[in-house]
Length: 199
Image (cartoon, rainbow, N blue to C red):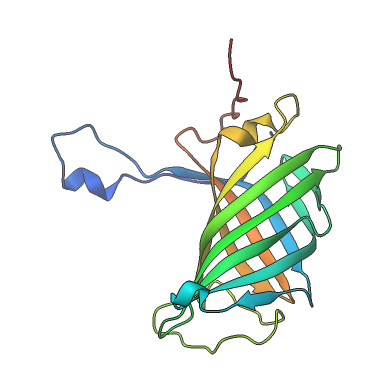
């Protein structure tokens, strides 16, 4: 894994509340990749008011996409996944995200990705329910984040991705979800070790 972009950790605000304990710091962030996922223009659909709960299941197919980062480059396997989001009916738009899809790296390895999170307008921001996938949302308008997990082959160059805690910061542009994936770590600048089960 080549040297990624980094954020410099700061002392944790928790230290002032527990001054008699060893000091802690905020976790560091290392950039893993940017993924641009083109949503399918026609195969999305809703299942409304599931079991009378006031929750709608909103399914949006992922048509294609690209992935680029300092240690990975590839494409999304076409039509390999979707976002099975829950729309919670409230005064403001609120989605609980649940996306799954597969990356195929340029050197021929498959990585299964799961991402769960939320989408909602930022404080004081109002907008109506979108009627198409072509609506753009920037980070200045929405809270749009996911927790990302990976399943990569143990004998592949991407085994290390099995053992990281990753978050996605998202925006929407031109019918695509744009996802910056970041790794949380206490060891900035150090190579991630592979995950091995057994001896």
